[in-house]
Image 1 (cartoon, helix red, strand yellow):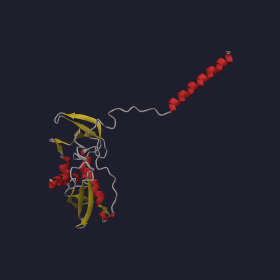
Image 2 (cartoon, helix red, strand yellow):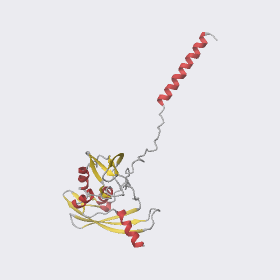
Image 3 (cartoon, one colour):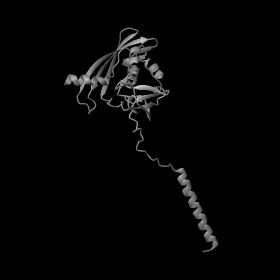
Image 4 (cartoon, helix red, strand yellow):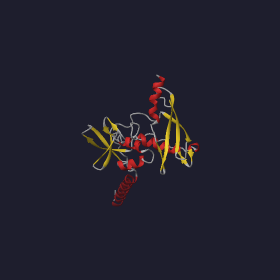
Length: 232
């Protein structure tokens, strides 16, 4: 083999190496998935009642969409129960008083108690707002600020399913400032339900300033206990 042939082999080898290098750089690299991905290490990263709201003309009175008002209030209220939560991360602090982890709230719309209060004030009267902000789990505050950041009691959200009910709403105008939302709640669409049934409940709404606020509120899903009692 002469020098010319050797040079050809060297050149071909160099070109092959360059091609392999380019392919490695250009092709997307595989991502190694940790077993704790998807926030499995965070028991509170659960958002309930996330179905998309569809407007219903029958629930719009005086240009106020009472269906949307109810949907937003229900979702917000649920964040103070075991049915839901504001978005949190896996970052937590251990609370010695409760002997439990508190998880960091990461939703910037609700990452301080003042922000939460301001949002609650749009939907509920002051007595409901005050009670929600005092919500406790095992005698310990559900939400608490630690070193200027908001945390939620760990392991409380998502204890119950929230898709086991269907709201059937109607709205009645009492006056320019008072309205009633009637909810016929149907349980049993979820095959995991032990008993089927319906429950009806009225929600009173009072206009305060520019906001229409609920004077009374309970999560529709919680009335399933009433259905169980009636069927027993």
